[in-house]
Length: 99
Image (tube, rainbow, N blue to C red; front, side, top):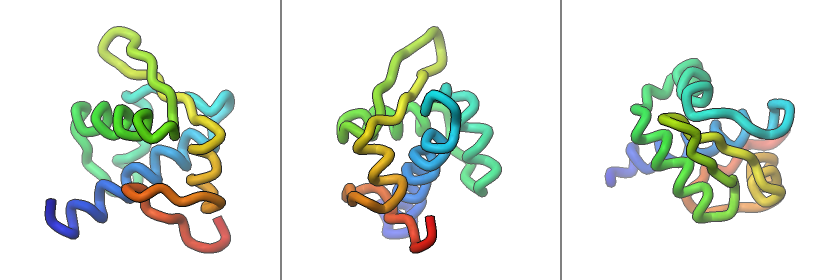
């Protein structure tokens, strides 16, 4: 993976965590996450979103439940800490100051 692709992947994962941190119940489905990612200048495929969610789940940053063709992601406490810069997870971009 090129350094630019790695940067995009890490940023996309941070956006997912920050979106989940800001919604009621800390949960959203992959379709909604895709729409939001597009607003942040990412153009992910559904497969990329599902892959990111699986990776984030492997890191204990989210839990994921498949519901038909969409996946519902719920933020964990560790994911909240990473989204707010209180913890770091290699593979997720660190948020800047003033998050």
